Amino acid sequence: MSLFEVGIPLIVLFVVFGLTVGILFGFFGMGGSFFVTPALLVLGHSAPTAVGTGLAFVF
Image (cartoon, rainbow, N blue to C red; front, side):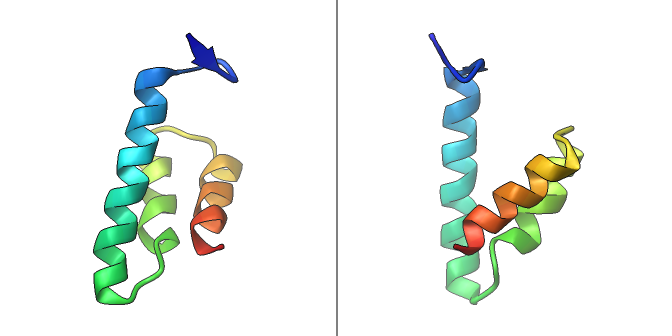
């Protein structure tokens, strides 16, 4: 089963990654996109996807 051609394990990875970044950076008062954007670029995602995901964490 997939959502927008993305497998369930990848969706779970994104959710866990988002929760981890949100909790850790929430403790330290830093923006989540400070860590998320470079991490997604290292994982091989395109730049627009990485920046858009970082913006979603800001909002």
